[in-house]
Image (cartoon, rainbow, N blue to C red; front, side):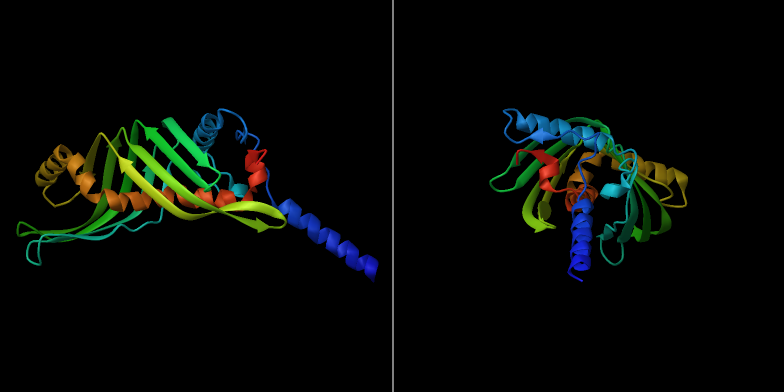
Length: 250
């Protein structure tokens, strides 16, 4: 009986150990004691994101380009009850996320804080949108698509991490995420805002002229969207790969 119990325990221990994944062989591993650690970390993250044009299901990493986010921006209201337009944005698809131009990363092991900056030439976000209401007393009722193009965008993330033990090994989990987005310019294109194509074209032209200012106004809502983009896959990865596999000499 004792022999059988010991055998079962051994099997369970083996399963627990095997449940921890090694770092993907194509991912770069950095030694925390090396002098240029943050440079190594920057290259490791940049190269890893660039590889995600294909999924890594074992690590919970989806295809990142294009990346579909089941996110709802909500109902945005402009104007009053008589001349307002209620808008709802759903089914976001982000394009260009793996095409990182350059990056910068740093890790504070005392506070367990990861800071990350990603720079791109262009990011395109496509969504479905619904609009209902009145634009200067003109009835608006549509269900169509919207495209937002960001030129030279910079994404900044700060991840507060926390260590915890699982199956005898230390892992990280994200306890707080902060995100900020800036862009040199932004353009907006709404398909079929009105039934009058000429008016739709004029409105799109005007929104593009004032694109940077419009994006500044809605930037906080988009920051929430991009936080979801990076945080969830990163969280999946941290849940499956122990700290000792992510870094050397940690």
